[in-house]
Image (cartoon, rainbow, N blue to C red; front, side, top):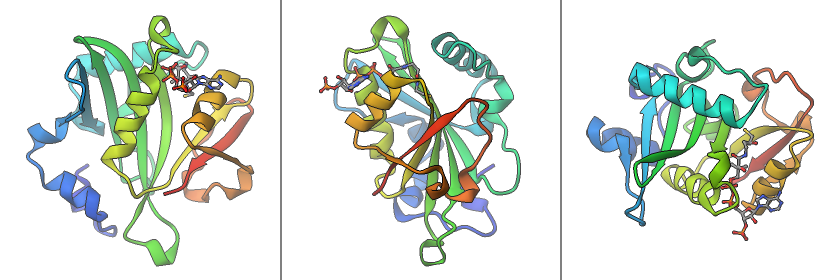
Length: 196
Ligand SMILES: CC(C)(COP(=O)(O)OP(=O)(O)OC[C@H]1O[C@@H](n2cnc3c(N)ncnc32)[C@H](O)[C@@H]1OP(=O)(O)O)[C@@H](O)C(=O)NCCC(=O)NCCS
């Protein structure tokens, strides 16, 4: 789905700037260190083989999750506007994958804005703890510096909770998470948000 053609939601300023770029440029977000490369695909625009590669990568990093290609690429329900799949390369090796769902902000005063639900973020196991996750997340957040970002994290995933706290996310009671962002999560979880 092309979010610029969404009937009811106007993209924010940063979204519009991004969407006005030629498609090729949208795919390559500039990052200051040349050895790092971030590629961004919209839900159904990701080449099939790359999608499989992203799914396999995340399933290897998060055993027990068992994501399928459609979880990353398809839009279910009417509320989600679109998804972005972020793939992070270091020296041309895939070292990080994240999937973010974008929803219209339900707050009537912010009806032009979007909320971001970070469905997953994973860094190559052998490369964790070396600053890649923070660079990766930082470059995702930099692409949209206006919208609140929400994530559900498995209650027992202390490592990930520590990481998100370090990155400025704050734990919130579950009831604070906007209803619109409430995709199911099989395991007991905690809610974190980065307000902007
Ligand atoms: C969570 C994850 C993405 C973090 O990526 P990473 O590359 O290991 O993280 P970084 O090395 O960039 O760490 C960034 C900062 O967070 C800190 N941090 C990381 N884990 C932490 C923890 N458990 N407690 C406190 N701080 C932590 C680091 O010390 C670092 O701070 P510093 O810059 O001051 O040293 C990665 O570990 C991962 O992929 N885990 C498995 C998948 C997962 O659980 N994903 C989240 C749920 S979808």
